[in-house]
Amino acid sequence: MTSESTSPPVVPPLHSPKSPVWPTFPFHREGSRVWERGGVSSRDLPSPLPTKRTRTYSATARASAGPVFKGVCKQFSRSQGHGFITPENGSEDIFVHVSDIEGEYVPVEGDEVTYKMCPIPPKNQKFQAVEVVLTQLAPHTPHETWSGQVVGS
Image (cartoon, rainbow, N blue to C red; front, side, top):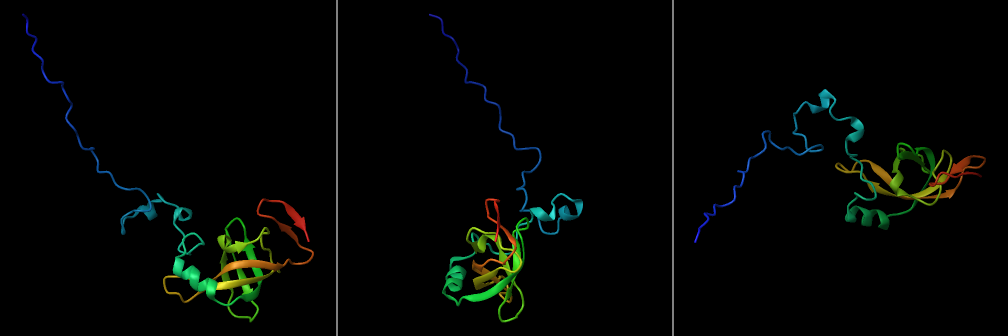
């Protein structure tokens, strides 16, 4: 009888990484000079404005329960995703985000709209338009659908 000695398999020891593993942007430490080094561009920063997706349920419920206002589109940039509405009563212009526009047309200057208002956190001193509906397209102005088709009105 021959007995073969069986030795346990050789397992390499576990090593921790040579350098610490840090989470990547947007979790840079406050005070780090990453912004000055050009490591992160301003377009990579998260928007401080609440969109339809990031707005809290309570803010959405309060806005939906509020009154409907009328105004005129002052300007809207599809590429930037936002614009401004001039209220019918002549008060300060209201910010509008692309996610809050309902309907098939991209707003252009002169379009009449209805909207509700929602406060912009964290101080809730300014407002943004939500549930924006184009009620009257500006006459003699070409309009674009969200799919990119240009329609003359």
